[in-house]
Length: 484
Ligand SMILES: [Zn+2]
Ligand SMILES: [Zn+2]
Image (tube, rainbow, N blue to C red; front, side, top):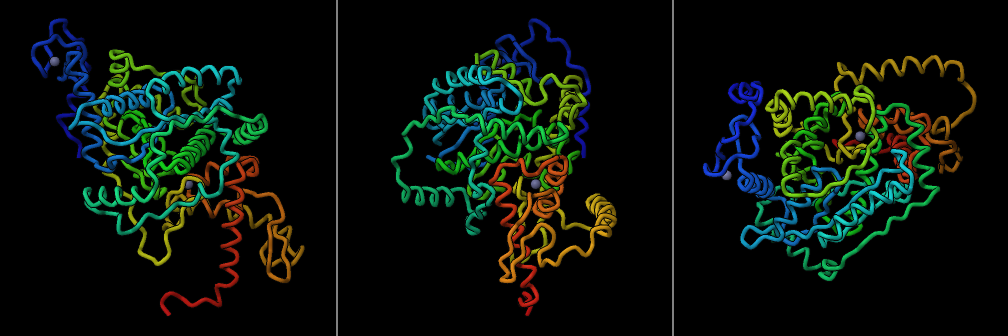
């Protein structure tokens, strides 16, 4: 239920701070900022509060092990740069409150999608490089174009050891250290710097892909998916087992609401929780989820945390240009007038769990793009069924007119040999991908004019999966049921 007191406090407009208000914490210094109605902090108490919150978030969740390699995914924005400064602060501290993991940084340059010139892209990269070099951490600056050279293995979730799924923290740490010793220890100190290489052909392919997507909503969703794949691959290729994302509480509130609108209800828990284990071997964590964007902006300004403004797909776009943009402006306005309501939205995300499907011997099928469990196996009374019924009805008419052309075992688009080795004969279409996607990713791909513009690691894997399921169907009558 709603917390009446908290909400009531939030509904009052924040009073203008009076000049001589004392800090609520030390009760000595004059307050310099007010976070919520009753919390006025002086500069040094605010710093302490901010730093403590980061440490508390990691401490409470206990998922990062000593000496573990953690990749910080930075966008250049205020929130992720603030996260970087917290990690630096934590590692530089004296024991016993020192953070003990081994950080690295990844930045994905999306300029090829947002239509920036190579010059403009280089300029932001130079600014970021300066920030990253000062930290002394190894970093990777990768253009999004590199998705065109990703291997299909990115789309394969690695199932983690079931025995490891719920051990105590101490056991998990012990196990981690044991496994770690088996791997060489030499790779830790080397500072790797990926140079910014981006071929013109790949930029062209990327632009072709995004111009084939009809709506901004779907473009943003696709961008998010591809960026995630590239980060995941970078983590795997360099032995990082955790990825830290800088999503603030305000960002997560936007994500939560827009995901509901995008039909990603089934994936809400993993999309917004503190830790997200969908990839198996690499776990996503979101340590900034307790900070509002306002707190972050204040902190960065007071303590000179640098960040770089880089325009995104929806920069300078109208409020109603996409579902994500519309939700963002709604939440931003909400935060201005009713700050507590925003944290109520995001707190809801902490309580979400995805109901596990009934136990079966086979592992649940994962969506080709977002790698969440496929949610299309649902009751008949659902929006999903309503859409698929009307899709089927509109196709019956088409099929009627084209019946009786040729005899093929696998259906239209397949080269069928009598030997049974059938292969794909034409370019991939939405219909082929459909069964491999979750409800929300279906909507995104449906907005594409040409599915073939997708990077080859996606289309190749799709063809492979399609082929496998056809083969399974063909031999199904010869297989024994699980019960027999
Ligand atoms: Zn104080
Ligand atoms: Zn999906």
